[in-house]
Image 1: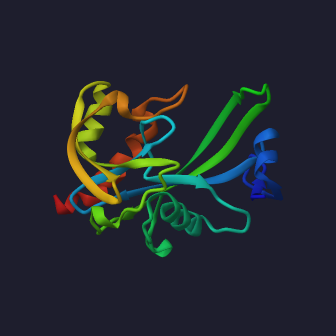
Image 2: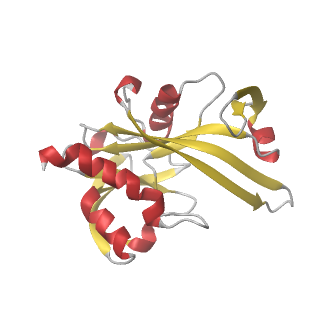
Length: 209
């Protein structure tokens, strides 16, 4: 059974609780949103298996007694198979996330998470990725500035490199990534969800472009 650290709305630590109880009782907890970028100004989105849309490079719950940095490194390793030094990541912001969802069995799923958003510089190549195919179909590399322009326009497309595992080998191909390919939830838009991350990558890589 997975346990999470729980908090009040002000961020004071209250103890620990099982993950299912956390979501049943709407208890505040930490998650990590992990983003990779490269020095050419590109950012990496994962292709979520369940929705088939683009989301964070990796993300998930921070386990009880686990540091945020270690949570970042673990989620990146579990979902896309990369080893990232947890001491070489940059905090971009902390975003409260509230969502109530009625499940098929009639019970409620109540999410009260503080999403700790980090970026890290990726210097590898496509052969380094090992995808958890239960969750992730692959990753998409897109230019951060061009992607931000599309999200600001609310339409259009950006050239992307789609990286997937086919018959045990990673392959890449160029595809048009459309505005509607980005995952967002009710009350959000792709711009509000991803704009500040794209802006951060633009700033971090500006001197190299």
